[in-house]
Image 1 (spheres, rainbow, N blue to C red):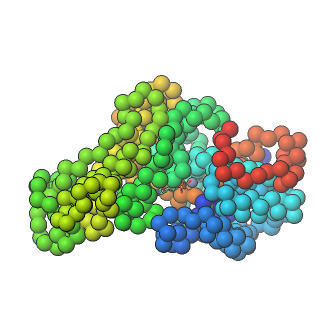
Image 2 (cartoon, rainbow, N blue to C red; image 1 turned 90 degrees about the vertical axis):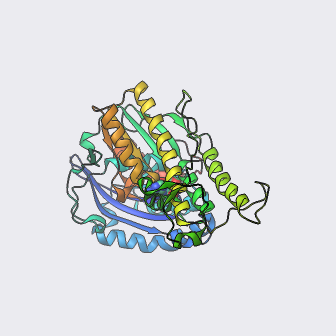
Length: 417
Ligand code: KG4
Ligand code: ZN
């Protein structure tokens, strides 16, 4: 079987991304993986501004495309197909990538494959590491083993169906059951906020920056329970950090929502509100503070110890719920592989604690996590999903997909099928 060359495009949120990959029976080789992040631009606003994101995509795309073709040393005529994220996501952002992709497909007369953004996140697990090109990981070796979690990162040969995938991103929290490639059954999902969204909102409450996920994870590492003494004195304010006071814990406890429900759904909005009330309660205790929870804004001058404990407890509440629901679902669905996908899968505690729970409770189940370089939004994952779609297409379907540029539409609420 000869190699299939796919150029893939991702613009569903605040990352403009283009990748070129070569897929063969030996796996997927990333020839180039270009990502231009707009995090700094949106940080000023505390979240992604859709129109700003679209403007940046429009500006970045041509240069990124040039760089991708240059690095992969590929001419457009050599490509077999173009893949794009056509949803879900922010519509102004999606429209830019979709229209560039449609134009390139028309101009270069190449098949066009629409990929669901979450399908891409899932297929980040199938990217193998035996590539020799690519600036992102020049020394990557095939079959990287993570000793802590016992997982074989990204080596798709070990991924056996059925798969139970825990999808955790800024827009989605789902448990997806896959009997085979490209077959998705959503067996549980969040009823309100996605877990990544909750991380971002809690970080905003604490005033620790954007995007919230990595910030909370970083602050949580500063909380070391063994060093803390239970103490009732209040030193949640910033200035008390410098007072050489003994380490204390505030005994903060947040709920584990939906933990005891028999379904596989999640809810994170109540947890976020619990954090808000915890910080507001503090604001009320503060001399001169308000007496009504509704009236007060949490102060942005929390002590480092307080922030660390809130972050640690909030993160652990999320991890506990995610692990418990995944294991519950695994008990019923009996998957051969449990997989993690989406931006929040970068979370070290989630990666390790889920791995340890699987090792302990389901030792025969393979645990797959995407390499850290593919957890956030990127185009390589979109290309990987497209490579599997391409493999399943007949020659007639492949030929017909050259005309997809006239029908594919960006869809903010695209459903995975
Ligand atoms: O998949 P993704 O890049 O974009 C969407 O498809 O939504 O996910 C972004 C989300 C953000 O909410 C971000 O805060 C979260 O992933 N995230 C993390 C970590 N890194 C990114 N959450 C927890 N811990 C992390 N280390
Ligand atoms: Zn994403």
